[in-house]
Length: 287
Picture (cartoon, rainbow, N blue to C red):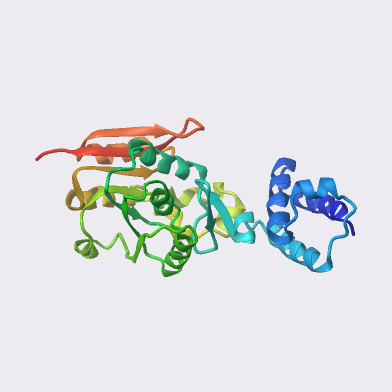
């Protein structure tokens, strides 16, 4: 079978669950990753015969995709802030809005001359601290997560991208562990923030494959992690320090309200889709 014939069949199969645009993007990623065949290669040499071994690899990937497995998990990688990041079932797939959170921090410290300490809470794949370290190399960055499997992936990503980050396995919700950590100039987090009752509204490729502990919070306590971060920061955010968090678009005002109890300046920032997705807090209120 020629590469063009197989590519067309691939698109047809993907379109049983994805749009044409989505199918084209997914097929492009898979063909490049599994067979080192780019779209331009197909256009230039449509009659090229596809090797049986490559077809088998592509077919295996297709069967996983048809089960709604995210393409990033199928190929084992994604891109975040122009960095290649390994992903698997132990970590969330980084989202564009998280890139915007990172950009907010980088833009506010664009000189790159400051030597500040940073804590990333719930690091997952390590995409946030790795991107920060790549663009702000003077920063001293610590990242924590409860999952040893997630931390193993994050450490691998740090090595791949040549970014020294101190990774620690810590259950952040366990306050008795907090004294083990020092104070920081910046606290950043993209914590779990989706109430469990919203699970049925999410796509199958999210609920069936991404780690639920990194996605969901109890319905009765949707602000759990933000409340803990605000409490933690009382003793672990240095004078003049800042907190940056990603949040649920429907609860950004509530999240901001939590930090307004402790900080003079709290800002809600919209993402590129004009949704309230980020909150920054600074200037601790004097008691």
